[in-house]
Amino acid sequence: MFALVDCNNFYASCERVFNPNLQGKPIAILSNNDGCVIARSDEAKALGLPMGAPIFQWEAFCKNHDIQVHSSNYPLYGDMSSRVMEILKQFTPDVEVYSIDESFLAFKGFENYDLHSYGIQIRKRVLKWTGIPTSVGIAPTKALSKVANKIARKYPAETNGAYVIDTEEKRIKALKWTKIKDIWGIGRALSKRLEAKGCKTAYDFTQLSDAWVKKNFSVTEARLKRDLEGVPTLKLEEQVTKKVIATTRSFEHTFSDIENIKERISTFAAICAEKLRKQGSSCHVVIVQLSSDRHKSDLEQHRSSIMVSLSCPSNSSLIISKAAVQAVSSIFKKGIKYKKAGVIVSGLVPTDNYQLHLFEQENPKHRYLMEAIDAVNMKYGDYKIKLGSQDLKRTWKMKQERLSPRYTTNIKDIIHVK
Image (cartoon, rainbow, N blue to C red; front, side):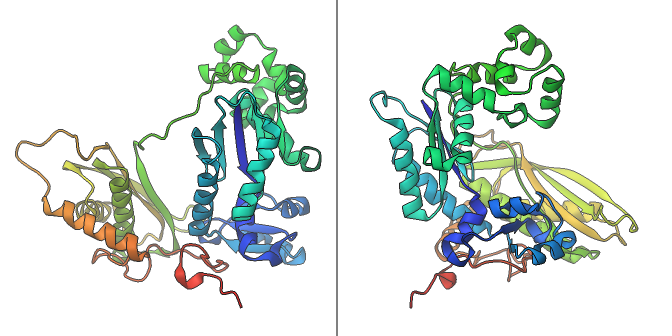
C-alpha cells in the first residue's frame, strides 16, 4: 500500500502556525518580487482570488475582502517542510519527498495494520509537532493514493482527513468521482484530448484499451492507467543527483549598468557553486542568461545567453563566478534595461571521480578554501563570507514588502514568549 501525505494550503498554514490571528482569514502568498499570487488559503479561493493574479491589479480586491497578502518566505517554508518530512520517516522508512508539501510513503509489511487509523495518527502527530494540517490518502498504488488524498481533502468531516481505498468497490467509486482533468499526470492539453474521446472521469480513462492508449499517447500514460486499475506500476523514486543546477532571479529594479548586473551574476554563480558542493558534483559548463523586461513593450528588448566550457570540472565559487561574470560582459548591451538574469551549470560529474586533464588542473587550494567558507556560512548563516564581487549586504535583492519573520531559521526572528 502507498500513502500520499499532503500539507493543506502549505504556505498559508506556515504563516498561521506563528501568527494565530490568521486562522480562518483569507491568505494570499506572492511570488518573487511580490509579483503574482502563487498560493491561496481556502478562504481566499472561495472569494474568487485566482491563482497567478498580478497583485498590482488585485490590490483593491484584496483590501475590500480583507485578504492577508504576504511575500513568499521560502526559508520558513523550507524549514517547516523538512520538519514535516522527518516526522513522516517515523512511520515508514520508505519515503519519497515529492514536493515541498507532499510525500509518498510505501507501507511494506503493514498487512495487519488498520491503515485508516494509522493515517489519522500521522495527521495528528504532524499537526501536534508542527501545527501544519495534512490530508492522507492510502491505496494500493501511487496514482490511487493521489485520488484517495483528494477525497480526504474534500470531505474532512466524513474521513477525519484520511481515506483508504482498499476494496474494488471503493476504487471504482473513487475513479467515477474523479474528473479527468484532476488525474495526477494528466495535463490540460491531454485532458482535452481524452474528453474528446469521451473520457469524462478517471474511470472512463481506465476503460480505454491498453493498445489504444499506447498508440495515441506514451508509455507514461499507459503506466498511469495500470496504476489507476490497481496494478502497482509507479514505484517510489529514489533521490537522484541533479544533472543541471540553475539560479535565476528577476531583479527588484531594472538595471542598465554592467556593474550591478555583474554583481547579480556573481551572486547567482556562487549559489550554483554551493549547490554543486552540497551534492558532491563539479560542472564542465556554465551558461549565463540575461533578458530585459518583456512586459514593457515600449522599451527596447534584448534577450541573450552564452555558454562557457571550463578547462576542467569545478565547483569552486571563484572559478565559476569569474567565468560567469566574463560571459555576461560579452552579451551585455548598452542602453537596455535588464530585468532578469540567471546562471546554469551543467555537464555535472562526481567531484571525486572524473576524467583529469593532462596539462591543466584546478588550484588544489580552492577545495580547502571552499570547505572553510561552507563551514563558516553553515555555522553562522546569512552567507557571512562572500566573494568580493558580491553585494556584502544581501544574497539576492528581491522586493519583499510583506515578508513575515523567519521564525525558525533566524535567531533574531524567534518568537518571544511573555
